[in-house]
Image (cartoon, rainbow, N blue to C red):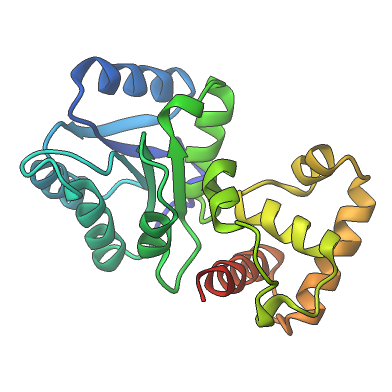
Length: 226
């Protein structure tokens, strides 16, 4: 019988070609209570090791050897295809919404996109990796902001009020209701009301709050890309 990821330490693999940075990430995750089962500085080797150990979540840079191009992204996408239940976090210095959208595909659950220079809080980083391992999402606000360059409201999101769109954007960043309340300076009760309205207006009626959240985020990201 399988053990739920909530009932044991989260297992992680780390892909990063900068040895000192990789050791720092491993130390932070380990100190945060997670278990690092594999690490590598080469995307091909990282993919092979991760497929063997099958962790709950893989943390990987986008640009890695052997080609030093988008090798890490390619490995992340392949992991998503071959082990659908595994979470994947891109930890990179490149803020490119297209990379995030390509990784997400049509399945926003279990995806993270974090910028190295903006990971300033160790607790928040460990929390984001854990959240992705459990099927949530964690998108850096700067990535989301670039998806929100001023333009007309996408037709698919037109039924939402500006406040509801702001709440949905915060959901895409992976924030909890409490986090959204702090970010938008509103009450948690107000956030819950707006989230319910988003589900209703976007006709997202599936059971399970977490599943509905990821479906709403998918609709949001798809609409922003159109």
